[in-house]
Length: 163
Image (cartoon, rainbow, N blue to C red; front, top):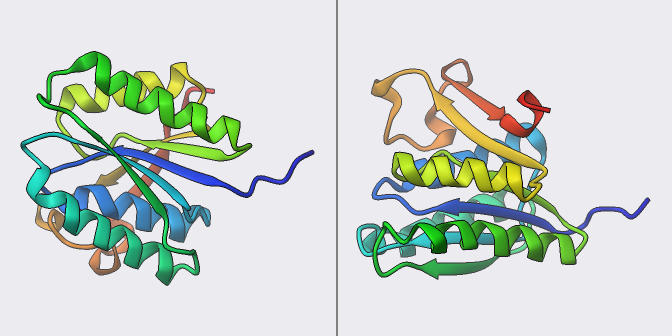
């Protein structure tokens, strides 16, 4: 058996950076999954948050002992480029496989249709995990993971739930 060394995280951008980075922190904390490759989907509506998201991901990964991750962007001209959204996830999963890596598709951030596409692509293209960070109270939204009570969050792996 080949040891998995490369870890890939694939997600979408959001106007709320916490929705993007909190699942990364939860995966590092709860699963020991510290990514060294991050694939981030952007569009004009979230462009102003991408730099902050990148900074936060780097801080989180480094805090969990990882090296600064390689971050690759897929930039959409319009958020409704459905085929390009699917391709974003497919390309990242294929890159992880070519690298004998483990890949998580996170469906937490983004618009509902992006999460639905991410879920389908993660399952269809064989991601190791399809994650969703559930936060059980609206009063907790907008807070970083370190400030969230553990009893207020659940990190789900839908690839496991539907296996």
